[in-house]
Length: 350
Ligand code: DOR
Ligand code: ZN
Image (cartoon, rainbow, N blue to C red; front, side):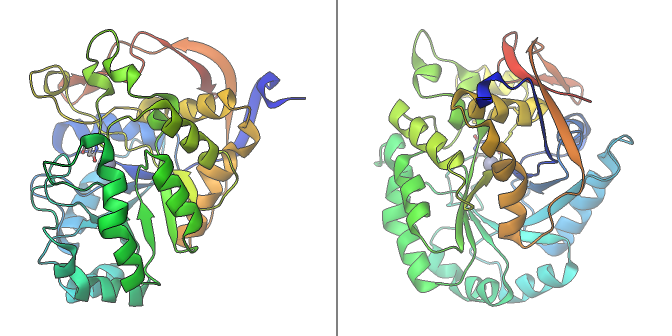
């Protein structure tokens, strides 16, 4: 039977290796979606102020644990530290010792939402990266060059050429996840790199290209960073995700902002996809005739890279078209989900 005639799919419970759950009022509303699907999630540290120390991560973890719904008691948040020019090797030791921190996030200053405190020049962090390499703590990279003159569609490729290649030469054993890759250049680069270099791919970059953001009027809910690219890049990402290559795994980059912050003259970057994360990936894999590869991408490759066990229970998906609500609650506000008012072809079978 070809995979696109399958009506049900049972896979090991997935994990989200790149997630924004925010803080305060909104945290509880968005976290419930991920906790209902995933065993674990890597929690991004780009709050205001950012999570720059083990102590701040401990405090944030307690707020997240408090927000986990009763019906998902086994969900585990995996915390990260936000790398700055001033992060010390001692802080890395503390982070590893704490047992709650699983990676450090490198935002080039100015690259995206709440990245002002990010790294001005990665050379300033070399002693800290040395310690991470020694202790096996992965570096998660927002891979975009930030100089204003660089065309926004070229920023990922420029980052590879100007920063990432050198980083890999200087730290040959550092575990690096090239986050939310969006180009054929990044997919090829990761494929050709040694096994300590991996990448996450979002569902939205597998499902959409830049026409979906710009043709027929600007769609602010399809604006994210790195920005959607042309179709040839999307096809390269689909090929990488469905290839069975262990270097590629699920990371939604679900990034909720309230409606007002998206539908405005200078809108925030980010798509909210956590409400249907695995369903959106299932649709992308189904479209590629590759449902048989979904489990490897969503549930096996991530834990393998991070040196963790796979989850020990299963989820079921059924082929069923359903209509996405126009909005979801986000604290006492609302967030507009991807595909609002439109359909998704797969549904988690609870
Ligand atoms: O689209 C994005 N939204 N990309 C990022 O890198 C950050 C994220 C956010 O925090 O809103
Ligand atoms: Zn992100």
